[in-house]
Image (cartoon, rainbow, N blue to C red; front, side, top):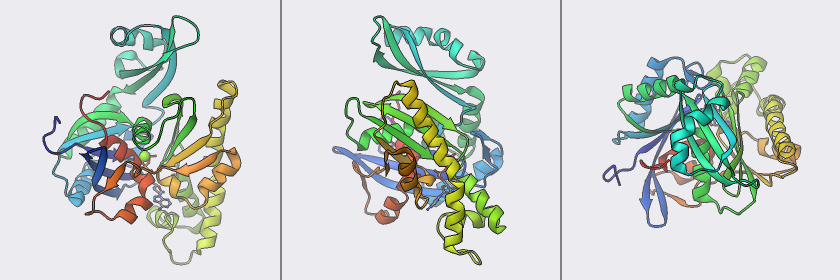
Length: 350
Ligand SMILES: Nc1ncnc2c1ncn2[C@@H]1O[C@H](COP(=O)(O)OP(=O)(O)OP(=O)(O)O)[C@@H](O)[C@H]1O
Ligand SMILES: [Mg+2]
């Protein structure tokens, strides 16, 4: 391994919460040997961009201290519809090397930013039915966003070795833990504090992605408004903690009403997919992110979409070290998902 005895950490710089994981490679799988999280004030990262880098650096340092991390190498990720563009495109058939050479030219017409201001990556999905054509996933991330994250991570004393994209980190985690069946269509849905990231995969390959700027923050805000609470107290209430003067039932009622917008968004994306893919059906939705822990949400998504919904289980092929609190980690697994997906990455991957 390129890192000596220790693998890199997976550092998920979420807009509502920082998470860090480290996985040890074991025969036939992985062992989680470290996990820690730290809530972030909502104004530090907005719409996928770093707004307050000084406080973010301090929070990352605090997380690293808390987790007692000695590893410097970190795999990080970016997300957000205004910084990351993921597109399925069709190109004339060519080799990976040829596409490497011409990607900038091919991508230009699909990217709404100056092609010189973005970093590009791609994955060839395979040939199309029409001869001579192939499907490709194109990923473009704004350079200034990548650079902001890299400098924050460096300022915090770490060495960023890979920059991934949230929805691909989840896909990575999914592939390690679930059986991939040809042609089976599964929707990976990450409901974070400020965004919903969807990645519908067919036979293990992405076939539709969407990043929408709403998340559990709308629930926190609804609780703040209804009960006149600070952000911190409303967050505690959302997590199911008891808060003075607010009954659990009243809070659940407010959350249920406010989460309608989240459910509607997911349902719209599924409808869009069905229409644009000529009737192809998603057979299962797998939730991750803090939103997966909202009481009753997965049931209501199932009700609305008619699709089976489950919460991601990262611990099918990842064991949990005896040093860690297994039942806690199983409870918060969906929150750890992106950091676990990042911790699976190794230098030399693409
Ligand atoms: N136990 C819980 N029950 C309900 N909601 C929770 C729980 N724990 C966390 N949350 C909600 O989930 C949010 C954090 O989720 P997550 O860590 O997935 O977001 P994030 O990665 O920081 O955000 P984003 O991906 O949008 O940038 C918290 O802000 C909170 O609102
Ligand atoms: Mg997140």
